[in-house]
Image 1 (cartoon, rainbow, N blue to C red):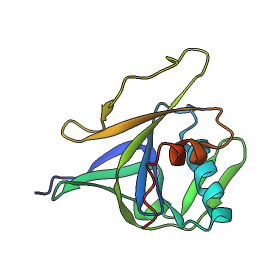
Image 2: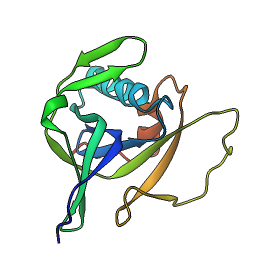
Image 3: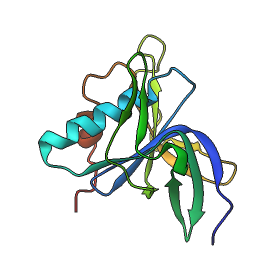
Image 4: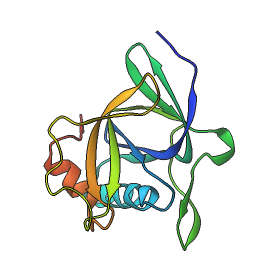
Length: 150
């Protein structure tokens, strides 16, 4: 089953074969966390690519959540206070988890188990909360054994 794509505010990346969709308000750290994950994958020899930054087209196809990049921003990511950078990218990928940057000063110490988030009215993904100030967000995600490298 396929639905019409919805344009959402977020950042989508792929690490190995795992799609990560970073969600949150402007300035919350989505792009910074996604960029840190991409940068951390390279020295590990893990494939990593940007799907889309700022605008992501989300749709569901045959039960899979698919993120696609608007052609006008393909391969571009805004790093706040630095500018636009060009990165290795793919035009679309399946998303497996939503990542929500949180402020450690106000976030719950232990988030609820098996938490999910509504990405659109009809699409939900498992949610991972990460400190927006995390020095190595990919290590945290990998520690939870969520990255599929095969």
